[in-house]
Image 1: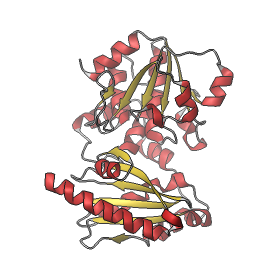
Image 2: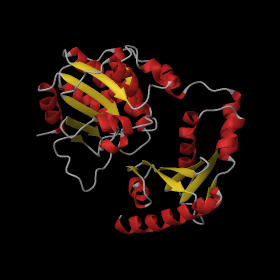
Image 3: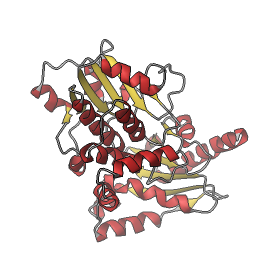
Image 4: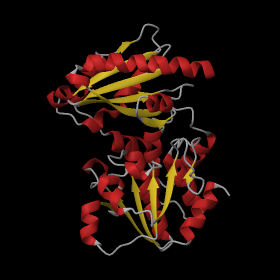
Length: 335
């Protein structure tokens, strides 16, 4: 049975469906859940998207029908709603949906995970996991087609946006001909690529450009230039009146460097450092992140690094880069 068959069989026996994604979601999880919700409503299903927190204002343009609720709001609005099926997109573990929602989703509830991140050491054969897929949005789009729902612009735009985000604008090796075939069908609904791109990445103000210049000026590499990194400090974000959400793509500027194998961005959040990793080649940064306490997929991953005894961010970075170098050497032996 393919994952498409699995999806269809699980959907057929459920009427009341709750869809969610991981805590602090980007547009990949949000777009995937919105499109799937709208498609299942076309089949007459009673479906809602419920996340740990309400949708950020920057993403509301994707939710034309206002199908996404924060958990507390949903609970007050529909306290009697008990789902036949809980669908979790863009992650494959309940622990990542948030504490309130995680407590609400009991083991007695039927659950279905739709994701393209690795789930090493766990049996998720009755779920819809495809690590070769370029994006969770691609999986969702293929599932919508498989159940016979026609793409409308309202359904297509969130998936298109999810794919843009998850593939870093189609730059990762997992992007395939199947990805582009799906995208062509989405564009047939009337999606305008420049508008879609500006919608998710936003048009910027001059202070944002100054912030980017400040961050790129911190760029550094290890001795053989296979690992590069930039540093993002909270005081810089505040100084240039920017939002953390506007900085996620900064790391991609490192992927154009010669010899680069792993790109890192370190965001100093005070008590800890958020480390993001990217790769556009053969190195699986998901494995690197996992080795230092995080996770992700092969070309995009992240982890949280503690500041031991209040050490400065530079010391955290030095320790992290040494870890990356060690894991990188081990991975290169296997290639």
